[in-house]
Amino acid sequence: MLKAIADVLRSVGGAIATVVTLPFRALARLFGGASSTARGHH
Image (tube, rainbow, N blue to C red; front, top):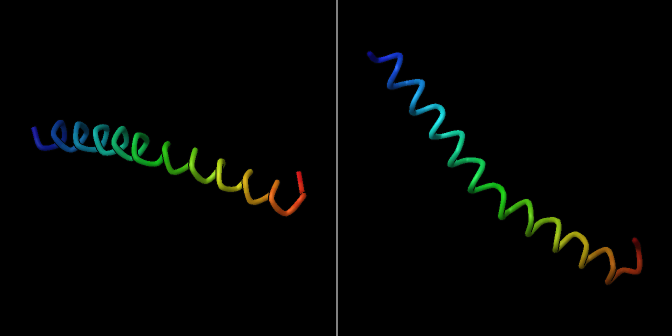
């Protein structure tokens, strides 16, 4: 019983972590590209 609950919490935590980190990765890519183009490096 406890193992099943732990597995569910782990899978839910992984899904939440993925959803939370995706926008930050996109923002990091956007800001990284903007800063690189501002400095003249591609």
